[in-house]
Amino acid sequence: MASFGAEPGSREKILDVAEALFARRGYAGVGLREVADAVGLGKSSLFHHFRGKSQLYYEVLGRVLGRIGARLDPVLAAGGAPGERLERWVDALIDALAEQPASARLLLRALVEDETPREALRSEAERAEAILDATLEGVRRLLREGIAAGAFRPVSDAHTVQTLIGATVYHFASGELGEGLLGGPLLSAEAVARRKQELRELLRSGLAAASPGHPPSPASTEGRRWRS
Amino acid sequence: MASFGAEPGSREKILDVAEALFARRGYAGVGLREVADAVGLGKSSLFHHFRGKSQLYYEVLGRVLGRIGARLDPVLAAGGAPGERLERWVDALIDALAEQPASARLLLRALVEDETPREALRSEAERAEAILDATLEGVRRLLREGIAAGAFRPVSDAHTVQTLIGATVYHFASGELGEGLLGGPLLSAEAVARRKQELRELLRSGLAAASPGHPPSPASTEGRRWRS
DNA sequence: GTCTATACTACGATAGAC
DNA sequence: GTCTATCGTAGTATAGAC
Image (cartoon, rainbow over all chains, first blue to last red; front, side, top):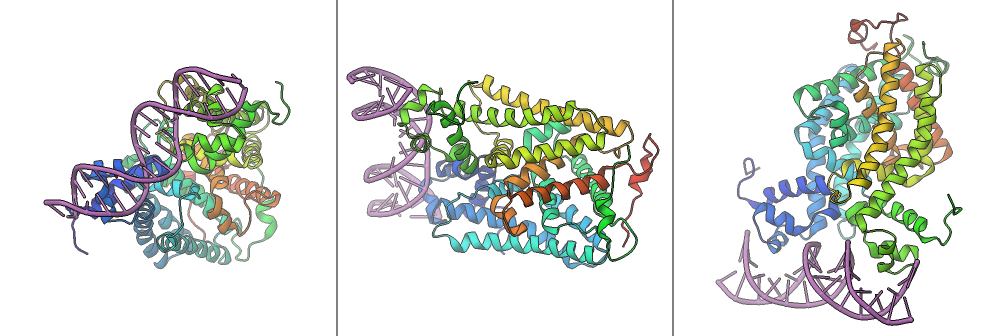
């Protein structure tokens, strides 16, 4: 509740610094010495704010997940047709990832990092997992509702979520490779808007139900063929 | 050329072991001690096969990229309509990622890992990068050809490549999260086939040109709306 | 080609003065 | 709440015997 920005109240500052470093080099690649130096403290002082490295890590991860979840939950709660709600959800996710450049990398790393020490840290680790699960379950429900309502093709909601994560989190975490492909920055306002647009169009034509009828007919999508 | 499987000819064995470890824990998370133990050698013996840790890493990475490129290049070289060639490319990529379970994680990590020491290793690092660039340039060209031929919507080829990477590499690297979402293994024959199918259907309807006409009309996709 | 032994640095973490 | 000092371990890498 207190603290605007990141006052000398070291704790927030440590989290900020650690977030940037963990995003860039991953859990094992960051030393507490480096964190302490960057925040302007001695190494030992960190242990007065966090029990150890892994608690610091999960605190950072939980903060990122909480920040993103806080932006996505209202979107899911709001009304509207499934297609529009999904678009707003994707847009909000992209905005969240683009605003905090470290988020996407940190998340992508966390997803791949099953080897981060979880021992004796169940509370922090499970809290982060719970936030993530709740967020993903929300969009899965939206997809299922859209399918049931006949707005979406009868896709697998799990696979679609995987595709959405890949198309957003991976994209904004792709760093040099992504910038090389795009021929410019990933995070400029134009690039972010373009990403939204490309994804929106892909989903509008790729996810929309083929026939106006409500109960989807199984053969309608399976039989689709390329035009040329 | 020699060596079937991985004979006592240590070098291949080291690469195999290192590949699995780097994929699981990343560059900084793996110690040479661990690699040596797993391959059944003393720590120092590794230095007779590789100049150091970073060379070992780039050798591993180059091998993975080469393996995947070798499977994708023939697909691009073969003829066929753009839509069918793209589908075969995606299928081949998925097969390659699914066959060698470590590949996807290693690749995803490599993409995010701009901090892997590149000093004094330009040759190995650039070789790996060159393989990757060539592979990606191939599919970009295919996308552009498909757009020019009127088979695909006028998408951004760069963004579409990003989406394809996210939908494939991320998916097979997603580990516990992905398995939790799918409710089962990522790499079973069924799950792999299902991933291909979901992606194929998404691309068929999401990437196909909207109108039979060949020169795509700009308004046709922009004006698209959700049905329900 | 593999081994033992070793050098040097950095790591996470703790103790205790201020 | 931050500091210095220190512990024990593990990191990459090298030298040299076998």
